[in-house]
Structure formats: C-alpha cells, structure tokens
Length: 169
Image (cartoon, rainbow, N blue to C red; front, side, top):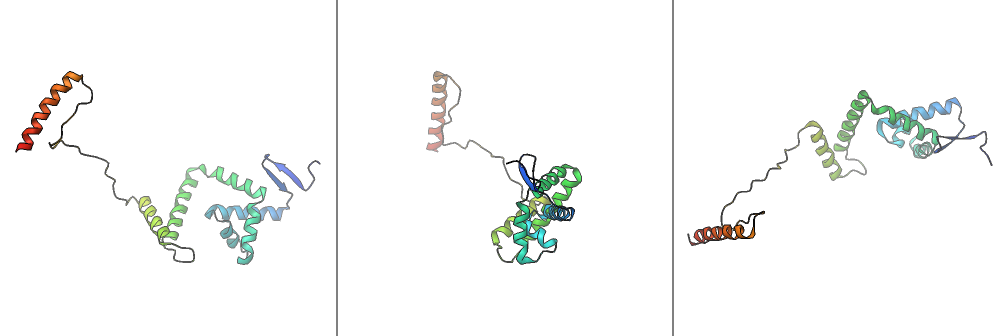
C-alpha cells in the first residue's frame, strides 16, 4: 500500500497529514510560543486555548510531524549571536520565576537551586579554593620517590635520626 494523498513522508522521520493554510499557521504560532518557554501546555494557553483543552492540544501538537519539523528548524536557526543572547535572557527569566515560585508543585530545593544558578549567572558565586599547601612539620619520615635502594637507605637513616631527635625534645 503506497502513500495516500492525505499522508506524505517528510525527511524519512515524520509522517505528516495534509493541512490547510489556516492549520499550518496555527502550528507555526504554536511553535513560536513553544520556543519561548519550551512548554507545550503554556504555548497552548498563550495561543488562547482554554485550560481544560490546552493539555490535549499540546499533546496532539507535539505528536505531529510538522510541529516536530518546525521545532527542529527553529532550533537550528537559534545559533546566531542574537538568538543566543535571547536564550540567555530566557534562561535568566526562567530561573527568576522558579526562584520566586511558591505555587502547586513548588519545592524549597528548586527555589534554592534557582537562586544558586542566578548567582552564578551574575558572577556572585563564592570562589572555590583549589590550592593545597603541603608543608613538612616533622614527626614523619619522608621517603623519596625515585632513588636507588642504597641511597634511600642512607636518606632513611638521616631522616630516622632527625625523627628521633624531634621525639626526644
């Protein structure tokens, strides 16, 4: 059974049904809203769908090949410098929203993590100390790593003598 006039295969990954211009414009508007928040339900709400139906429409849209293709095209076009700056602003807005969200499904841990990430964005995180100071304070016999056994024995005798002297004091 070959392809019918109502279905067509696009890009070997998506099967799309034929849509009229009005339906295609709706999907393009959905993808435009979806790319702002990466939230299909929120995109449907932003387009004016009633809340009880928005979840069903979001699921339906995300299951359509044309929507997935439009999302891929939109993601591919986000590599410009202006798009990267816009994405950074969106991430910041998401973190600010999460840091101040006390509604259903919120958690203290999510707010703390969001605040921590906002601080990293602003450059206000504490500096991490990576230096380690190692000093020889006595009381331990030092063993050189790469020497001959005879030379090590001589050095060990000297170190042992120093150790005995410090213990006597």
